[in-house]
Image 1 (tube, rainbow, N blue to C red):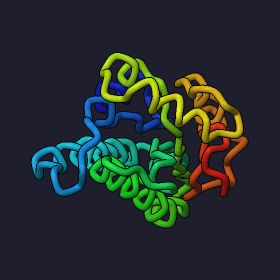
Image 2: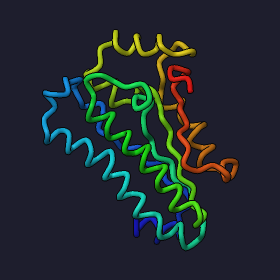
Image 3: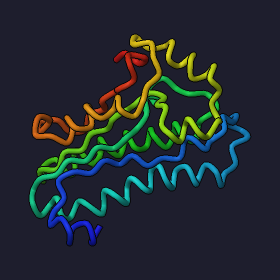
Length: 181
């Protein structure tokens, strides 16, 4: 982060989009290894936490900043056999809300995108999800097609822009209408 600030001079936005997901094999809860559970939380929750800690001092100094955490709509509808992943993304949602209360008075807005199953390169190449599972997921959507990373760009750009200056602590579900709030 120090290098980025030295090069750019400041930071106005952060998108936290790293996660352990594609490499996970759907596993019954009682069979999830404790080390794997810890690994998922270390990346998905602790990684998010550390990135936010890295940018907040600069954002505080300028009394402005936008943070977009990438969660998951699986937290809202559940996902059997992925308790570690769903738990970690639930923590990201909760962290977003807690930090919106803490950082909002300092001009820092923090929101969370909750995508559905997205056919990222990692998901496509990992081979842990069958094409039947992917097709079944698409069938739950009002927009019946597979979700791609490009489907999240507009929502993320909006949350990083001045158009969302009066939004913080919100969960923005982008899943083609699978989870209807």
